[in-house]
Figure 1: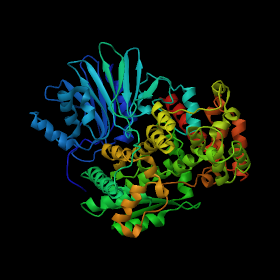
Figure 2: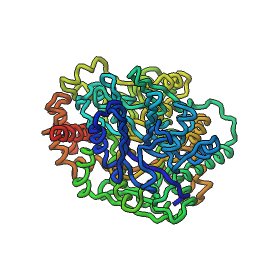
Figure 3: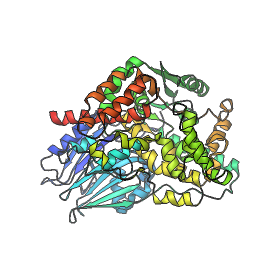
Figure 4: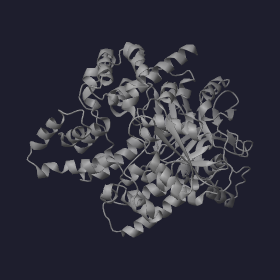
Length: 635
């Protein structure tokens, strides 16, 4: 499907500045087998200094895509995880400047770009990537991560030695870090459901931030972190005619979709039936060399099935559609292993659906394309509109009325709409209300839940955090713009893209996201946030879809791969949850209070309350922590 090209398609990299005999590299590579089951490569500098490793998912060109890869003089060595989508134009540029390239891989483009531009090469790249380049002449190691964080990269420094890997699990396999949980990160995880910023669960291990590079020099023996791109702040002036905006976003998105279809293997689309995935499917079908394959997921319990809408879209675009019904039996059989195999906990329940769908699709395709990023860039979340309205309430109502109304609404916790009303009317800033909304007020449960090892962190009731850019936008009065920027900097890389990468990589499936091209992102920021959220949100995408496929109109209400978590925790996952509360080390080691969680479990099972928002993050964490404890004990 799409134009042929040669690319390494490596899905896991690792390295260290003190490789010794290579056993550390081999251990890290072995821990990433699922990311690249078809091939592995190692580079070990004579004398046991720098070592680089790579695991490969063989999409095409097995012989020509082996990594690590060097320049002609073997003074530069590189490993790349992901895709450089503009590598053909970069290759032509390099050939024009006299470079000789022996392969048609994007990794080789990296080493020659480095010869031209050094660490500044990151500005030329368009894609999803994490890479490492060793410059033996300058004794310098360069790491880089893509602009939104589609591909992960963990690293640690210890006694002047830098070690890095695509996964935390692989980094732990090097033997230079213990599985010691960072209490502050554990606190943030319980509240937000993911690990924020550049932190990791393990003390001493960090993540390279999206849009950043890292330089380690053999003389200084310490890392220097440099930003090279951040999401632009939203525009405030709306001077472009609407039809021109729709036309431009259509051209940019079509170009981005086309670039993500390039492969020598079948490519499919994950289709939920919502605006984002529908637009991707429409454009992918237009440029597919054969019949497009689409995939959706449904359930045999609950009322969240959206398979009919997805099937209708597939029919309209002429796709070969495949539908997975995730049964309660399958949930009971597969979810325990899914959670145990997580590289780092992420409490987004959609992980289960996406992981199941990835395994289902992998039987027919090696690459899948999805609509991730559209909500954050184009104003798709309903909370943007509601929280902006709530920020204006003090100007319309007597000062004490919103607080009284919030308190009254809080007396009806079983009613989701009442809970949302309580969030909207509660005292505090828009960002504080936002945290309560997205976390279902988990902040307020910390004092009851935390065990002695976490209780000392509770010097304050809130864990609100926001980058300075977001706070500046909020102070300007653009609440929607502040929340969109916050999600692009925190929620998108910390939750959405982690979920997508881990779910698909567990199934050895490559996942691509057309909405996260630099051109699309910078265009979206040029449109004022108040335009994006008109008519239910994602105004430009809805109108583009209505013009492209008139029978679909402006698309359906926001949808995604949601899951019937409440029913699962009372049904097929009830034994797992009970065993977790009774046996998990997160309670016996003093992180959380087992008696409190036992009470929540009973309330949930007896249908006296829906405690899934509290129980699910703990189940995910405990499943991961216990599995890692066992695996390290065996090792």
